[in-house]
Image (cartoon, rainbow, N blue to C red):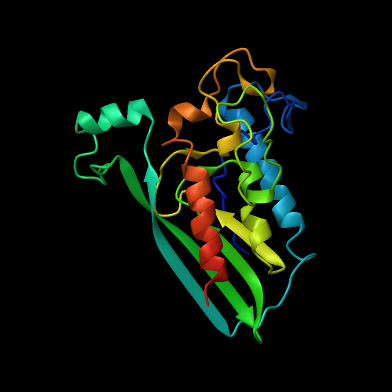
Length: 221
């Protein structure tokens, strides 16, 4: 068994939840290492419990890997200033046309000609709705209301086991649905202040460019 942290963005941690510490029988203190430890132990216990319950034997006879280098516009002013200050020296630099080139990968394991496992390799932390679907494309508070919703990554695949690995060979920050991009007031979902994700994202075009590239990799022959 292999456990992989999918590195998906979008705050999927149990914020506000009361995680009971089995040692004290009381809720673990918020904002503490013990709280994180209790959550981790809870996940590990469930993985261990399912060890012998849901085991599949796959006779894999074909492995396919495809990768595309995708040019993504960088419009985050903080990232641009960092580039101008040469903070990326020795690392991958923002190009002269203000784009970043990042890899998008696709892995497929097949048996008897049928895909059994498919994996999307994404160069950042993708919001969950870009992975599984559910992009909200009509919030009037968004900066690009009505922008086309990107097709969900996992819905592009057909194998019974579909996975998404974030931070795969690059770390471009959060990858946010363009229709939900929100730097300016009024803010989406009734928020009273600016959302956190856009501050740590290359820009609103990352999601559509990555989705388009991944779809091409899946469809390639």
